Image 1 (tube, rainbow, N blue to C red):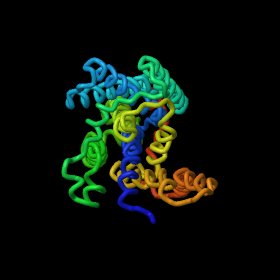
Image 2 (tube, rainbow, N blue to C red):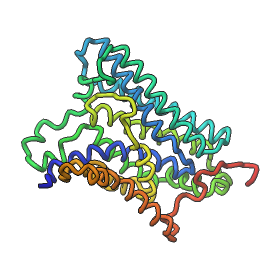
Image 3 (cartoon, rainbow, N blue to C red):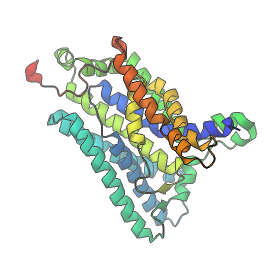
Length: 329
């Protein structure tokens, strides 16, 4: 039997890294910056948080202060992700480097950066297995409301998550509101649609592009931190993220650049990602592999349907991926 009450919480937990990565990338793309480095940013954000948590846990012998156990990895994660955003902005906005090449290079760099420092920490611990377990910090991140278990299926489905899951939803809602209902969001969208016109109207193109990319990277970095500290129970393993960063980028197109829609779309993709674990396949491994393909098949179908759309509001920002030369105005 398909256990829906067990499936939904797992799908939601799986969806949070996708939601944070999608929200961060949407903010970047709305200002015209196509950041394909999001997978690398998530790696850097995660390993930065792991380094901060590792140093703190070992300095206090495992007797951690819950507030510091949350603040230190979060600040470390945000700083690491911010540096990646600044690097991408400097290369693509200031130096006008190709955004596609820069993003792919940053993904390769981010994954290598995470694996290098993750492997170094594993050697420092002298562990017999290729992973680091930060259980004390993980308990602070994954702690749910104390009365959730007393509310039966309602508490299991809606109240059984760590605080970062709710933070991710709030961030997506705030991002949608800012983009669509504030002057800042209007300027940001103007920069992404027609930077020459925005520049003529007195909008600082460089400032908005830097801010959008840096804020987007910091949000995406939190997705990496959530995966390690909450979903993976504080265990870091090299190359454990898989392709979640790329799915987050695909979600941007699936949601038509709307962070509020990403809340439900990420849950859909999160459910598809783990569906094979809940559908009995017996000993037929081929069927299980077909179920594992579902999120990627859906992604391809979505890309095809999106490419066939003719409505203007369903199209990407007009200057997405294009450098802005003020001299050409």
